[in-house]
Image (cartoon, rainbow, N blue to C red):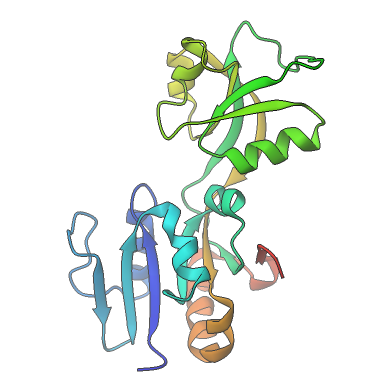
Length: 224
């Protein structure tokens, strides 16, 4: 039906708390479990369909209307800057995006014309951060094992997402600056917010009560 909501949930570290959020509200489709191999689930009674996609793909599904709503990490939203509405901070999946480097390195090094090499899986966010500080950098994009880059001479510093910082310490790296604190966010397709206004708003308010967030605290992501 036209008022059925499609919700994109992220694989990985945010999936379990996302499932718990909808379970607490009695909206979880039958059979949806963290270890399920299925990717699409339907709750016919509540007119909700959920799809399980890669975390980095959630904003794309929502922005282009394949999903009306989704759950995405703030780190992903800061990197991709999708044109979506962000009504709620869901307050789980807390972590931070940081600049880190070897413990012997200066916390605020001074460079002349030489570009500092930064390894990261957040190239756009990293470039914006250092540009705002007026520091020339060369971005080296990696998809994993970011902490290894300074140890083998690939980069002087890294920009990465961390929770406890244990992996940094084990690799003799230290946190030198915090770029952003991140949590999971509810995002909504802009067209769905208009064409399915009541259905979308009702669900937002139901989730709002669970997480204790006021809608007025929320804001947009991406361009107007």
